[in-house]
Image (cartoon, rainbow, N blue to C red; front, side, top):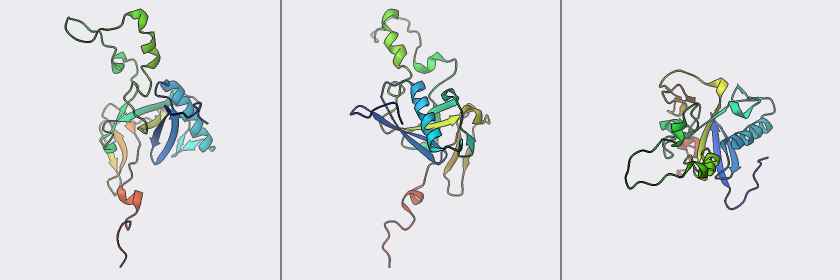
Length: 186
């Protein structure tokens, strides 16, 4: 069960790996670490044999890596990691210099609230009902810039060129609705 009690502000995120999708309720300002713990718990409960899509389920939520789609309208374009290791610039913490009519930055003493929410779904640009790819860090493939397709041009594995491979299968319309759906039988 999720640690979140659903309310009017609760979001539902779809976590995808290969052909599996896990729906989780989360708060817009919930930390990614907490979301990963909920995701790991849901995966462990739904796969008691300890494997998902042929991969060993880790014991720690720290082994889960998350990514958002580059284009939410076309998942086949690839995935962008939500977390970068040792890279504070990913979260927009760039120093601002110079004068101008830009937004003022908060003083150091007032920025504690930002530290608590910089890795939340809302601050990372996710939306309610959004799709998030997940994988386990032990299953990372470090080849460069590859896309594997099946016989129906469905993306099986997307590599963003930075050594990050995201195994997400995007179903086709025929798979979703059937090939004869909507046709008149004669």
